[in-house]
Amino acid sequence: MVNLEKSVLSDLLIPGAYYTTKLDRAMGWARKYSIFMYPFVTACCGMEYMSVASAHYDIDRFGAGLPRFSPRQADVLMVVGTVSQKLAPIMRRVYDQMCEPKWVIAFGACASVGGPYDNYSTLQGIDRIVPVDIYIPGCPPRPEIVIDGLMKLQEKIQNQKHPLI
Image (cartoon, rainbow, N blue to C red):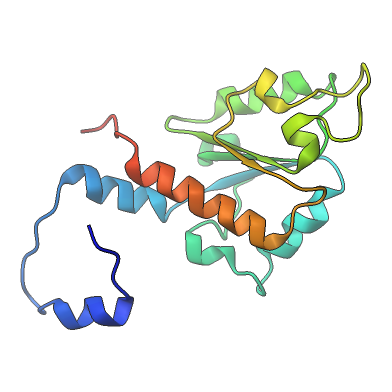
């Protein structure tokens, strides 16, 4: 399928006409633009998350602008910052309470690999507790990298086989 600009696409569409597509593609497109994130913010990367969520970077264009603070209403767990060994079971419980399909984003070096903290109290990467779909590198990651990570997650959601079909 060719990606067309919105203005070009609107010129190709005929008002009142019927169009066909595969149900799988339509489901992927709908899910791709309705990302409901649960921000699990624990440390300094929270400031970068707030800057990405602000109007300047506008993650609402990805369908991710309204965070959900209940895991039962979210489908993306965004782990932002350092996760300690004491906090790991709580994060796992939040993940388990999310409905399928669900995805996980490791935001920053601490969530991805433990960051500069190589000690007994820090979890050396959240992938030891929950499966991670997208790793966003950096300490703290730049907003452009976070947007790139969201775009990669959208691509993964679009191309995923949907269980309802």
